[in-house]
Image (cartoon, rainbow, N blue to C red; front, side):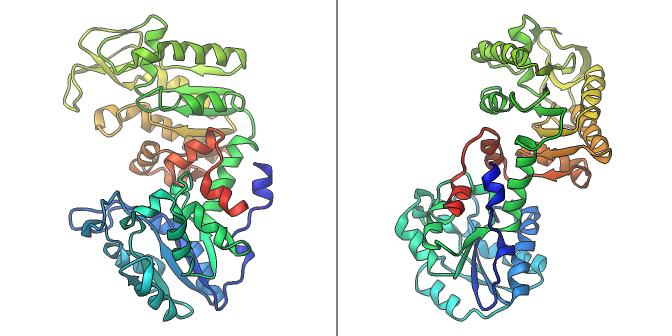
Length: 402
């Protein structure tokens, strides 16, 4: 990782005057029923890279995917977001009806310095996901310098994220967002100030097992919350009623607890839970010890005693990684634990702690509770961040280094 940080070439290492920057952005944004952008976070995240190129006196060719189209589908056309991109960047964005071929090449030929062109959805071509070399070569004709600024897809070996880079042996770099993602994850993985606390929540142990195993050597405290906590509680002989559980992962849960002990990592499980008689915001609720939940009841949030314990661990940490909520925060009556956790992280951050939040649900929670500005860094890529934390080499990042 050290070498990646040291030799990381970004757009700041290039002068784009009279150059066309071919930028892989991640504009895979949610659209509402009127096909308007419902959340423009990812477009905003790419703005600084685009502005750098334009201020140098170059032009930008933006390529992205949107959704999971099956062939050409109107509702997944990037023309639906062109006006929002124009509004955010402050430049009228032109649109090309294809991302390769004659029309795209014609639009590129006419593109002048200071202008921005958005290409049609890469995934309208099945060759994109297949990592097709010929498709990557076609795309490479559309710019002088290749910039990857799409952290959200950096873990995919797709044509536009990994294969294309070889056609720009000397002229390729990271965008400012992707560089920032690498640097901030590096802070947690290899450059962290102790004590380091990882908060891993969400529904299933199975989806987080490799992350937990990978980070145990780097952390001092592990807080486990959300649905996955019940697998640990049941494995230790607790009664969890009808709470979410992965019965076939109980051995795995016990082995994590054992491994934590061997590596001197303090693992903190919830001690109480807000339980409900059905999975509904209108359910009857009460608070019980987490290992004594009656039949017919399910734990949907952590209780107040747990909030106090978790808060104390967080306030005594110098580095925090938060991946996954500790309750069903989408329902108001079961959001208290995640709000309490978020507020504690915000307070620790204000006192000088470095906090990294990543993974779809945690990011959604941070936005919902207006904490985005109160943590050190919010990662834009769920899957990519998790794979980096697992110690994997991401194809999109590696392709720039080669």
